[in-house]
Length: 165
Image 1: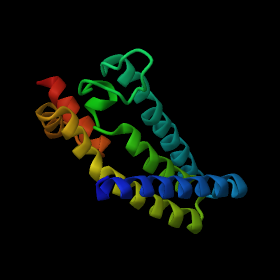
Image 2: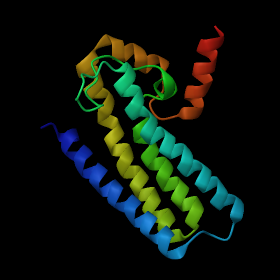
Image 3: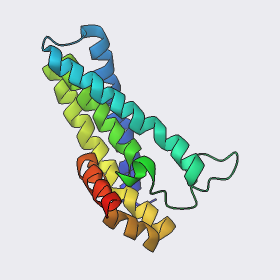
Image 4: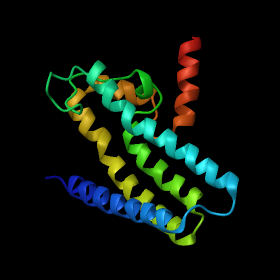
């Protein structure tokens, strides 16, 4: 097992644990006093749910997944739907959830836990493209040139420019 794979699994587990702690504190403490921040957090949470769930169906439909296999067992690069905007929508859903909970709770402890959680999720992200390059080769390298890994704002901009060309 390569070093980054060990770190990846450790970071995912630790990041998810901190995210769970944020969620528990939000349930215990409720929302913060600044209503527009809380509503922004709820909106971001909903976007995170979309980024977490929609890829499951997109991979099953467009990824050449064999019947009965896990959705992650793709055989082709998926570059449509959310995957036309960002390469890793499920990976960015986790930091979205952390930021959403920060905005919803508005407590320094939740903000600190969220910041640490996001840093841990970023550690995971570093190795994901390497796995995909090993699996798909030049097709994935081309995809990387067209679609950003994490930034949905840049991804939407590039996607709109591709569609208008």
